Image (tube, rainbow, N blue to C red; front, side, top):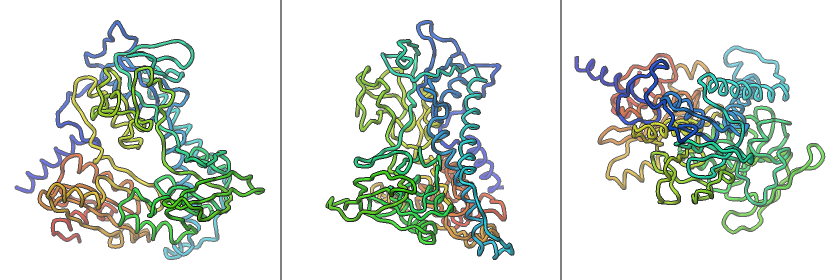
Length: 522
């Protein structure tokens, strides 16, 4: 009876949890036939809410504002779907899916181990590129349709702040007003000084996603998410890759233990080498099949020249910059930090670092720099609307999961081990760690893909989960259970008592959760 009572409490807790850790307050359910009272627009404004930007964040904010009965207009600037849909998450997943099939079908040893004979595989570059573009176009159309179906106005012009509560329509001189304005302009690829991008032989992710040719030898500047994913695509399609990383370690944003394992699984078995601790100080475009790309490298510390290499193509994957340059922030005396708009936890814009709230102005997504992921932007958009209508809400970014869609995938949520240890020492608690292995999992063994681990970090005194890191088959899907558990405040002991389906990859996590509290997984 005691176990049953605990189980019911946990189910109730998880049922009200969301990925962005809402304030624990049960809100009335709404239907389209019973819209909230907020539907009336103040006579002094054209709209309740204007959203500048129509990426994943702006789209999510628009849908949620509409659901609260607010009159909404979205300034899309000719870019419905934004970076994620048109030049990022969505088309890159299509390239990874297609190239992943090529990798799988080319791995004759893996196929033979399961009794399958393969006589090689061919691919059509243009067909793979078309698959990515068609997917982006389809998702973009779906997003636009979802807004129009709800009567949300889409303004084709680029939105510019011209005064409080006022947005200009590009350079037309026309203006629209709103009680609240949400800035969601997104970001653009960051190109370091000295790097000349022609988006043909030297390109950012924008050009790379077009897959205009498959280079025999490609350099990738930066070894974060974007660089790793493109290395996966290129090596599957037959390219050799050289990473150029300014920091002393590959994959600097990853948990160190996971990064080392990723190097063993994703780098060493493939035609990939790397240069660490160097800047690509000068990158000169070439001509495909005629003239190579030239990359000059300097030591990251001494700034002395160390090497010059020639490659067929160079991808620049050195992060992203906020797209706030032409937003009109200067018209409202708003000071940014390296282009990032400063906000408080409720997503209200501040007029500068540690500044005052600018009434009626909000900023979400990459432009505020809090967590530059599409789903974080969407969560922030929903949160901003919640605060807008008087329901206090904040996004706990430590409960927002992230994933790198290599083969196999890497995913995490919360603190990495170094961060967790530092916080434990500062706050006076003891860090616990438990690891589950894919090599002990029946489903992974059935796939003959048993490389990988799931690492759970927790407070030993309270059994609170503070971080989970996974590398292995379908890690990006597995991490969601962990993010939801953290958002709901589920302890490692409570989740260890939950039943995981057998035989599934989720049992890798089950093993780690059980190990954290001294239990054994069968």
